[in-house]
Amino acid sequence: MPTQAWAWRPALSPFPQLRYLCYLLFLPSWGLLAPGRRAAIIGTMDLFEAIAKRYSYRGPFAENPVPREDLLRIVEAGVRAPSAKNEQTTSLVIVDDPAILARIAAMLDRPVCDTARAVIACVIDPRPVLPGLSFAVEDCAAAVENMLLAVTALGYATVWLDGVLRRDQIAERIGRLLGVPEDRSVRVLLPLGVPLVPGRQREKLPVQQRAWFNRYGGES
Image (cartoon, rainbow, N blue to C red; front, side, top):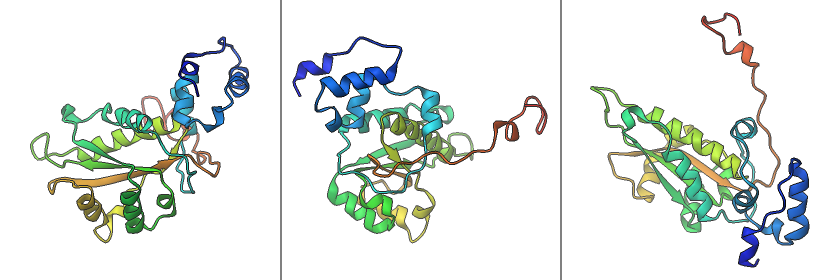
């Protein structure tokens, strides 16, 4: 597609569907663009929309690669998450090498990993940041949630893999594969790509059953 097309915008419309149709009509290669590139043109979704649409995806991925610019946007969201005393104990390894992806998939034996176009490995540093207290797990969880929302906003899908890493020394084996220092460990993996199967967030309890003002179980 010509470079100048990236700067082109149809007139902004209060009807997003109409604006999307304009792109389909005037940019023939629109459907070939990676989700993140489309988002860069028309804008990513609202935060609360991303929260509502985020879901755990365990199906196959399309062959579309995930551009590194999108992967960097996703991990940028992760590193901007809060951490205890701002010690930033979570680091991230972005895997997009097909050979390494295949080795990780073989270790995990999870269908979602077989076709993942990238995997983000979340590495924790368990050092104490207060006397006798480490917040590495909490720091990591905050970073992961930010990335889940970024993945959703850019039109990709993923699933939070954690428990599977804790058996058969899988976390340690993946850590060695990725060159993770011995004093740190892989805590979470996010396999991602363009989903081939539609998905939606699982039903949640009404907020009135899980949140209250001023007293547990009180008024919502």
